[in-house]
Length: 290
Image 1 (tube, one colour):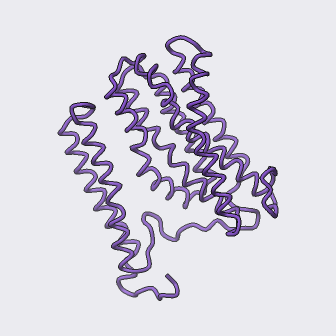
Image 2: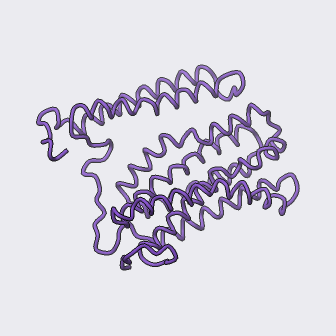
Image 3: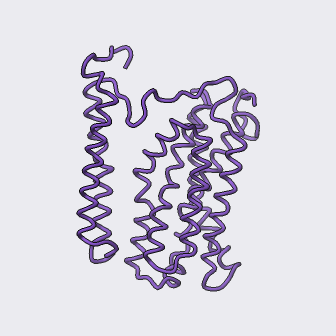
């Protein structure tokens, strides 16, 4: 597969084929991620849940995306966007089908929480596009990727209620949700067999060390640790929200356990980050190499 020259949006060869497939799988990611939003009324009636529980589903739908993007980013660095995005789309079809088959609020909540992982697909496509386009075309390529991809949520809002009506009955929303799961699997397969991580002849560079980001100064080391705190704080806040009187999905004791786990995970991240970057404390990296 030779990388074509120029930027022809109507082309479906070389780098343009990769760009089009990238925004398509990102589009599908958002299509699946927000497949419940336009049918919340029917879902609430079918599962006999309150408006506070509906709001909880909305929170859970985005909760896991914060840490998921970190994890998926690390996996992309190690295995490449071709394998990771295909695996993400196919794997996330499982909680999609789980949500379609849910009969209780708890089942729906678990499925929506797991589906938050598909929102991490954004970072995979960004890496893929950056591998295929030169610096003078990268901005517009990523703009097309992000713009058309984000349209997936709007497409879900416009099309899924129609699909639900076509299936008919009070379970129409279930069939519409299940359809998005099938689409996710199909595009995962299409992506896997039609792209490669880099243009022919190029090398996909992987980090020398895996487990934490490499930095080049003590100041950056401290900044990196500080930047990790909001993610853990957001997860702690979510846990508290799920235990309040409105949601009441988990117990107060369970929340305390979650706080403890989050603290331990952060301490482990501090240790891992230091282990990866301990060389900078012995010998500073020259300014020109930072």
